Image 1 (cartoon, helix red, strand yellow):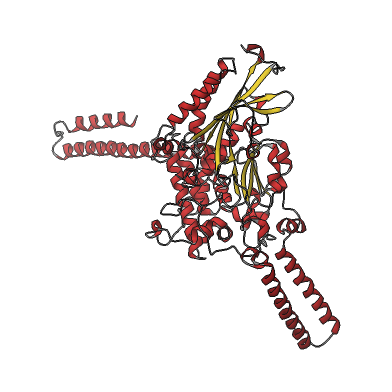
Image 2 (cartoon, rainbow, N blue to C red):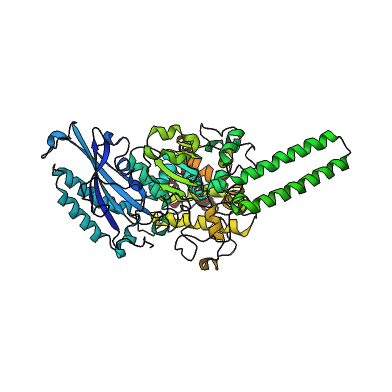
Length: 626
């Protein structure tokens, strides 16, 4: 696992306490070790890079809960492009219960958060230990006991050594819970992140919000281990929106089929519909020299067309005039670009640079982790109100953020997707995006098979690698991801229809795909003819089965059919037995007649025992018939 050079070898960097002051709001009260040389742990000093830390550690609505926790990410203080990962456990206690009550305690309750800063995203494992420490700290009812915090810091450092971190990376991150909550739309979310869009989750409490986002990200291979080092860094990248003309990134691109009918994917659209074409155009275009050059060319071309039309010459003359004007403007543009440099019309003015597409992360034999959160593509599990400017920052290429302040929700038009706590709270802002994310029949079969694996057994105690476990579910999504990437790399084919051809075309234009496909990966050598995991399977049968088992009416029909089948089976057995017994009785009857007839023909004496045998047989058969 990569770690920022220049930092201490330990994974745990700091432990802090944040308190809520009745005049100043949330503020830093204690930090160990201190954040700068010469600073005291209780000095309250915060560098500018971490100015939002108090608002993140005590999130909006914290006063509504006796206790909760939140995950968030900050830029590293050592290397600005790197990230550090924070877990906050906050509590509130009645101020009358405090043993040592300071003068600044003026309210009936006291809110405080204990925060741990780590170099690696071991959110769940830290939360498990920090929650216990925070509880003990509050039970002392004396917040001056900083020795308890220092001891907690030392214990955490010993607990998270290099050898133990990897085994605790996924603690508390249940893909099964996520699948049961979002069901089929979990795959929609997975594919949405692959398209590098602006996505915002909105829900309460903060613990549910941030755990949902971290769990969702953990479904991408190796991303927790090595793929989040740059997820909080906003840089002036050549892949940013302001350095592109908007024709090579899905996050700023208008789909060519965006005006097509979307009746077949209306279930993916929320109440917020796509903005007007003019409004989208304004959002897609960013001011820059390249656009000024393009605007100048278009303006001059319009003038040439007008002049040619006014001339009223023959068609040949008009064509000649337009051709000459086009050549002239191409020459002007070429000279202009030679002077202003590559940003105006080079790779960044419509095509992504491909000469140095290198992953910023250490990758495995399959090219994982993908650089989903790099080059100003952000992953912020929780975002404070002070960070709302992120939604307007032109340097933010894509993002996955969590929020619970209603002001963020009021700005939903600035993101591409707004996601709530379940599959019913799902809003996409653009019809083109809804078309790209529409699940195919093979997609629906894939998801239903996963759901069927976890619903019947509820196997929480299953082995890590058994079917239906979290590790197994992650392996299925890994297979899906790899198949989609290979399909996109191999060129358009019929296999694209299994993934949704619109989705694959959009995937090809993302930064992470271009980085991944620019290199050969040894693990892919044995993989030929990449196909959807459920290639060729129809969702019709799956939907019919789901209708019979997933609805009340369907279950009634199923029970009725099963009951009818049992009646028919039992009736068949009874009917068959009656025929057999009747045949036996008739056989006995005719045997008796034959015996009597033989007696007459033989001189009046019956064959000994014949009649009795016939009667006995008839009585026995009669009992059987009853």
